[in-house]
Image (cartoon, rainbow, N blue to C red; front, side, top):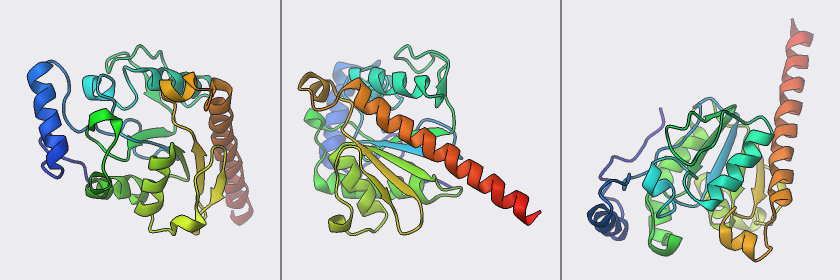
Length: 224
């Protein structure tokens, strides 16, 4: 059972106030904690930072409605981790395949920057995504803050698991942690991240999932 925040989650006073202000100015937006998207038994978990103000906070689906989502979903579709068509809205019919997306912080933060206290307050929900059975086998983090949030949620030492784009770290429990720069417009505009760079990390996740599935099938045949 994965814990999830209630619609009027009171854990972070600053985020509660920001939600209230957005509800007043944009009453037709989602303006609430954004739930994870994708099948609960997915073997790949993608972890972002937080909902974008006019993206997921507006639409109610992670990475939906802004530039970061257009880039991410294009990569997932191209590599078979999604099917359908991404049209930047919750009812576009897009489905994720063996992939689930969540955020380290479920509510939109001012200036897209959650405070450490807000990351800590939302950690229980991230722990649920990481640990509820069946646990994801591969975790793909988008950005340094999401990486740190996952490391903290798993109770790992930050010094032993440092962020860098393209890194591949085998965790103590055998799962794999992959890292990419966040797919934000800013990162792409400054050249920190290019679409091919993100594609390469997603392709690596697909390759690892296929490899692990093949190994599992081989072990089952040997034990039959």
